[in-house]
Image (cartoon, rainbow, N blue to C red; front, side):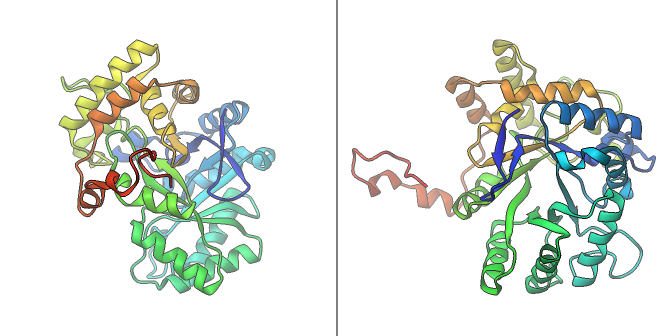
Length: 351
């Protein structure tokens, strides 16, 4: 296993993170497609991952209606010390008007509930699951800072934030001398590269780590799907009528990417999913890739991506087929940008 610093902290996490969204949950078409693993399966997957060197697990209080955290707390037990444990809050966890969002009331109530389910006295990385437009950042970050100061939280991160929201949050925490974000969790895959426009430049400039969720675009890049209608029965991508087409993608563009994935995978004797994960791991801004699995075989396949080395030609082919259109002001800022430096100076400029 390979490890990377968690943002600018002194903590190191595995480049592959186990995403616990598939652990537990109610029986319904969407949950069944995402995964609704029983405790024995969770125990086997978590144990195998830790044995393979994985020390990073990510969940959320809303996954499986709380069952994901509960199962993790049960199966980790003595192994808790071997794991950098991350969870998220902000989604609705009850019927009350304050059982959602990022008010001081919900931050502290949600934290205590997660600690109880996870059977631990601290969360290593506590993350805002989304942006709350109703709660001032001063209130959100003040509550999180209190949680850090009393030892219930080690680090703070955000998820699904726009670049300006991340920057504003760090500005508030800096001005008020509060604990600031060390990571941002975002959707990033060959089929979804929007984070490259604004978010990644912001994270790189600020020294935050990037945690990638849905790196296979909801399984679309796993190699089990193609433009000819090939699907895996019961998978998320087979459950479109149940609202499980998530995250949304341009399928025609995605199928072109899948064609190149298969070609590269065949050439280097790897699986398409390993190639897709290896491409992400090769991106300089990426700290860790969050992979959700339903079977041990999927876990072993994903872990193998760490050892996949893509050539410059492979990277160029994948970059070209997945390239996103330039947007303003990015295109105007890069227009004739090389003329800003002497001809013998390396370009692009160092960060």
